[in-house]
Length: 218
Image (cartoon, rainbow, N blue to C red; front, side):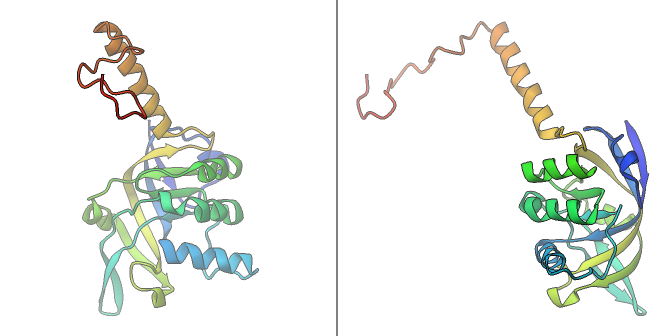
């Protein structure tokens, strides 16, 4: 199913999204990479307030390339970065800041799956290699924080229009696209083996026949 999400978005709306849904996002998103995640979580744990509002919003795992034209920032490229490494820190932000959408590449681990289910959020998968396309969907750079970390590591506040297409990779009910694909692959493999009359318990290696853990070849 194809849906458009406008930010900020409520938990109720997010919980309607299911794995494999196609989503387009409009509104304000915040980019964050390794250093941004770390700084944000450290500030929160010290009881400090972040300089931007993540509540009911979106974090995009992205290190944009931007240029200044007449004192105005323009995003030139904005591709997603691999999200698995943000699992633990991302889960903290979902729980403590009520982040509804996390956008990135690949998948994320169990801590994030649990946090999204408990807090009411989803993980949206973007496509690698589409940095120029996504940059065209950025309407305006509203602000930028923590430029001392470097351009890609800074947190950019971007207004986007129909950012996507994005796929729901983890929904708010604990379902993951990764598990769905693995289940389909497993089912298809078993079907093919059955059609070809292949015994899953039998070894079809003819030579050499080597016993595991032994140097002896039969």
